[in-house]
Image (tube, rainbow, N blue to C red; front, side, top):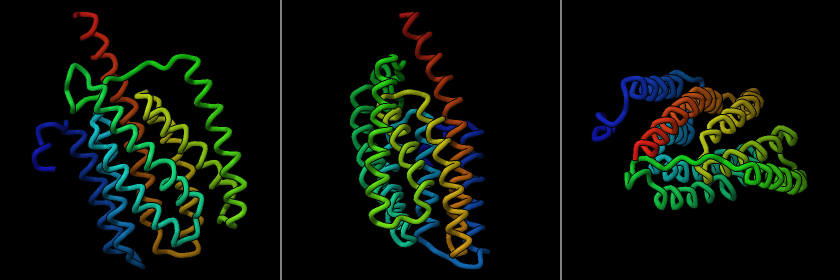
Length: 232
C-alpha cells in the first residue's frame, strides 16, 4: 500500500488499517487458525478499498479473492459459494476489469467512468439474475449444498452485484452489501459447526462497511464526473 499512501484519503487508510488489524488479531487469538482464510479476507478488504475509488486494481484483486474463497467454500461444502465465485464472480470481475480499462474517466486509468443505468438494462439484469438463480438452485440441490436456501439467495445477490459492477453502476455496492449480509448468516452457521471459520464472519462484516462506503464514494465521484463533463 506504500505507493498508494497519497492516493487514499485518511478515512480510507483508516478503514483499511482497522479492517486488516481486526482480521489479524482474530486470527492470532482465535481458538483455531486458518491462514488461507486470513489471506483471503485481507485480499478482499484491500480489493474493496480500490473498488470504492473506481480503480481497476480492485477488480484484479477480486479475481484473486474469488479463487481463494472458492477453495475455502469447497472445504466446508458450500458448493454454492464455490461455484458462484469460481464460475461467476471471478470471471465477471475479469471481464469488468477489461471493461473498466476500456472506459477510464478522461483517460485516467485510476478511475473508471461511472454510468447511469437505463430501465431496459435494469430489467434485463434482474431477469438474468432470476434465471441464473433458479438454475443454480437445482445444481446446488444436486450437490447437497449446505444451507441450500441461503446459498441460493447468495447466488442472486452475487450475480446482481457482479452485473452492476460490470455496468459501472454505483448500485453495485448496495447489491454487494446485501450479499454480505447473506454471507454473514452463512458463515455464522458454518462457524457453529467449525469455529475456525469465525474470521469469515468478520471478513464479511468488514466487507459490509466497505461496500456501504463504496456506494457513498461512487455517488460522490459520479457527481464530480458529471460536473466536469458539464463544464467541458
